[in-house]
Length: 151
Image (cartoon, rainbow, N blue to C red):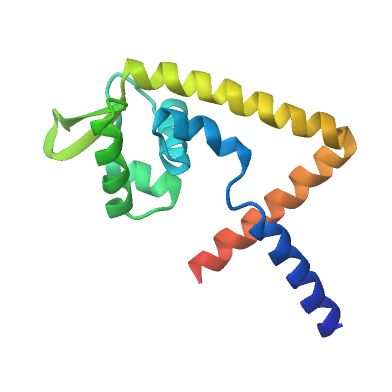
């Protein structure tokens, strides 16, 4: 059984290696946005209780499961691009709030539509049953990867 598991692991590794530059990343690069930046911006737009105020860096860090330093690095780049703005919390000047700009909202809406169209093509290609199974397995794999990172 160990040999079969090793063969399956090698097959998966081979498949994963082919995902280095998925075609879904092309819209990001045209706009100068990295996939990780898109994820942060999308989360900021979806999960922020009050978009006019924004979110704390610590909240962003927690939701994305990355270090506050990693968040700061990403928001520095996004701020230079005009996608986000930082401000001090009026109740505690030590806290920095991050909010999406109007430019961000327009760009993310367009990118999301492009990504959705791309994935709809995959759903059509796979069919409904295989798409559901792919989603189930991919979600399960993501759970494994998250758990492995915590160890």
